[in-house]
Image (cartoon, rainbow, N blue to C red; front, side, top):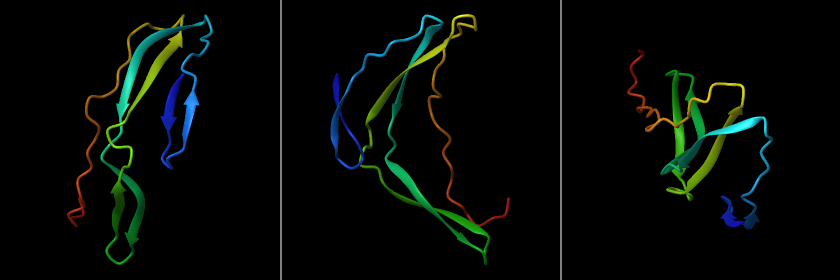
Length: 97
Protein backbone atom coordinates (compact mmCIF):
# COMPACT_ATOMS: atom_id res chain seq x y z
CA UNK A 1 0.00 0.00 0.00
CA UNK A 2 1.06 3.59 -0.51
CA UNK A 3 -0.12 7.01 0.53
CA UNK A 4 -1.29 9.20 -2.36
CA UNK A 5 -2.46 12.80 -2.51
CA UNK A 6 -4.82 14.25 -5.11
CA UNK A 7 -4.95 17.78 -6.57
CA UNK A 8 -7.21 19.03 -3.78
CA UNK A 9 -4.80 17.81 -1.10
CA UNK A 10 -6.89 14.82 -0.04
CA UNK A 11 -4.81 11.86 1.04
CA UNK A 12 -5.77 8.23 0.70
CA UNK A 13 -4.19 4.80 0.78
CA UNK A 14 -4.02 2.88 -2.46
CA UNK A 15 -3.25 -0.80 -2.88
CA UNK A 16 -0.45 -1.34 -5.36
CA UNK A 17 -1.08 -5.02 -5.96
CA UNK A 18 -3.46 -6.11 -8.70
CA UNK A 19 -4.31 -9.49 -10.12
CA UNK A 20 -3.32 -9.85 -13.78
CA UNK A 21 -5.17 -12.43 -15.83
CA UNK A 22 -2.84 -15.17 -17.13
CA UNK A 23 -3.80 -14.20 -20.69
CA UNK A 24 -1.68 -11.04 -20.30
CA UNK A 25 2.10 -10.56 -20.15
CA UNK A 26 4.00 -7.54 -18.88
CA UNK A 27 5.75 -5.66 -21.71
CA UNK A 28 7.00 -2.55 -19.95
CA UNK A 29 7.14 -0.32 -16.90
CA UNK A 30 6.41 3.34 -17.55
CA UNK A 31 6.93 6.51 -15.54
CA UNK A 32 5.25 9.84 -16.34
CA UNK A 33 6.45 13.04 -14.65
CA UNK A 34 4.03 15.90 -13.99
CA UNK A 35 4.80 19.09 -15.94
CA UNK A 36 5.49 22.50 -14.41
CA UNK A 37 2.32 24.04 -15.86
CA UNK A 38 -1.24 23.02 -16.67
CA UNK A 39 -3.55 24.28 -19.39
CA UNK A 40 -6.78 25.17 -17.60
CA UNK A 41 -8.72 26.83 -20.40
CA UNK A 42 -8.69 28.46 -23.79
CA UNK A 43 -9.70 31.88 -25.05
CA UNK A 44 -10.72 32.38 -28.68
CA UNK A 45 -10.86 35.80 -30.30
CA UNK A 46 -13.30 35.78 -33.24
CA UNK A 47 -11.91 39.08 -34.56
CA UNK A 48 -8.35 37.82 -34.95
CA UNK A 49 -9.09 34.08 -35.22
CA UNK A 50 -6.61 33.54 -32.36
CA UNK A 51 -6.72 30.72 -29.81
CA UNK A 52 -4.76 31.24 -26.59
CA UNK A 53 -4.16 28.71 -23.84
CA UNK A 54 -4.74 29.80 -20.25
CA UNK A 55 -2.16 28.27 -17.92
CA UNK A 56 -1.50 27.88 -14.22
CA UNK A 57 1.29 26.41 -12.13
CA UNK A 58 0.88 22.67 -11.54
CA UNK A 59 0.74 21.99 -7.78
CA UNK A 60 1.89 18.41 -8.49
CA UNK A 61 4.87 19.47 -10.64
CA UNK A 62 7.64 16.87 -10.66
CA UNK A 63 5.43 14.14 -9.25
CA UNK A 64 5.84 10.72 -10.82
CA UNK A 65 3.15 8.25 -11.91
CA UNK A 66 4.27 4.69 -12.53
CA UNK A 67 2.42 2.23 -14.75
CA UNK A 68 2.84 -1.34 -15.92
CA UNK A 69 2.00 -2.09 -19.57
CA UNK A 70 0.48 -5.42 -20.59
CA UNK A 71 -0.37 -7.15 -23.86
CA UNK A 72 -2.27 -10.32 -24.57
CA UNK A 73 0.09 -13.30 -24.51
CA UNK A 74 -0.64 -14.16 -28.16
CA UNK A 75 0.39 -10.67 -29.34
CA UNK A 76 3.90 -9.38 -30.07
CA UNK A 77 6.08 -9.18 -26.97
CA UNK A 78 7.86 -6.05 -28.23
CA UNK A 79 8.55 -3.83 -25.19
CA UNK A 80 6.72 -0.51 -24.87
CA UNK A 81 8.11 2.81 -23.71
CA UNK A 82 7.06 6.43 -23.40
CA UNK A 83 8.42 9.17 -25.65
CA UNK A 84 11.39 10.86 -23.97
CA UNK A 85 10.19 14.42 -24.60
CA UNK A 86 6.63 15.46 -25.32
CA UNK A 87 5.57 17.81 -28.06
CA UNK A 88 6.14 21.42 -27.05
CA UNK A 89 3.66 23.82 -28.58
CA UNK A 90 5.08 27.22 -29.33
CA UNK A 91 3.20 30.37 -28.45
CA UNK A 92 1.04 31.76 -31.25
CA UNK A 93 3.02 34.45 -33.08
CA UNK A 94 -0.03 35.76 -34.94
CA UNK A 95 1.03 34.38 -38.32
CA UNK A 96 -1.49 32.36 -40.31
CA UNK A 97 0.68 29.34 -41.21
